Length: 510
Image (cartoon, rainbow, N blue to C red):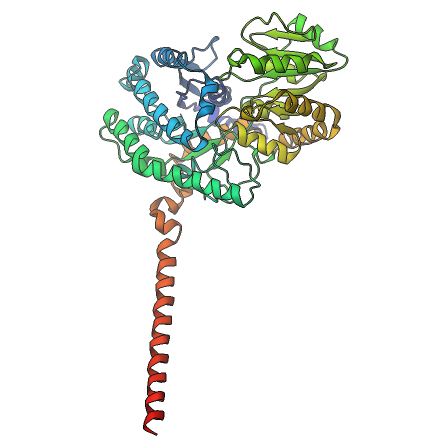
């Protein structure tokens, strides 16, 4: 019996003993993207695997089994680029034009990512990897890295599956209830919303086919001359990770190699600093936490909106914690301002009654994990879609920045603080997020190890990748059937005409 138990223990630990060497690249200069990559990396490192994490962020502290590769030149270039624009200026772009803006921006990022000395050093090294995890963010060319290292590719996106990514996963695109991430529509769309969403999807598809994919192909073969086409590389990605959960983003049709890992970045909350702990404990009327995330700075808010927000806050009995990057001399007594707050630890405190956010998916997920309702002042990207879903699920109120007024902001605060259903719905969804067969981290570990064990997942590859677009949507079949019907109708009318003609001729002869 003792020998049998020893053998079983040995078999259970095989995947730890045979630790894999895994490369993970998240080149987008955004804290939210970095945290998703970090969550994936930590989950695998804790299982004993060796990770190389490539990012434009320099890790502040070393992690066991993780080697950090800092894309310092990419970081420097991105900071310089962002210093020339105010994120709120993007709001002046028509939503559908945002498709072209994102494409143009990420083609620029592609060159600086590949030219970064740290990236070139990695590609010219003699490293061997068992799997390569690549963030997808308008960077299909990056699949060339997995081809270069002759390792199975795994994609990871910081948002939910949908129209933007279905070309790589093979997931079906159903425009009636799958909103384009930039459209601002929720899953429940009326006729005009569905019409607008269809136009978004068609614009995206045409832009990809006619311009963006050929440009991605150019970048790919510039740095990986022997690589196959982008279409072939995308079709052979083994597993697709998405930062989503049905309770937050709504249920969608998913292929078996499309895995939702929403909440992968959530860690047990750390101890709050003493002054902040005291502030929250003593807030008997409750606390409102206000943060516009890492990409949208509070200091960039135009003065009229900033003053309107402060006037509304001054009338509240609750205390307010506002992540704001500068001093606010005219702030009310109930408002506390700091450049940075430990967000997850704050949301975990029982006295926090509301989270005012930009509507980013990470912030939304964290808020729901701890059962806190939200007001979303969405600015760009997927924020408006996230907040539409929040309203539909009853745990939040959407207040797009373009529609922001002092009166609407005050009314939203009054509604969400006076109506207990918002908190109840947030708590209900929190229960759903925690009631899972396995954790997001366990799913990541299982599927990465699965890919390594089987050297890819060709058996999970959908044949949709082998079809042209007109075959995928059965356009050729529809045209064939319509043609057959038209020909049949034509023959029918010809026969009827001839029969009628003979009958008339016979009557004439009679």
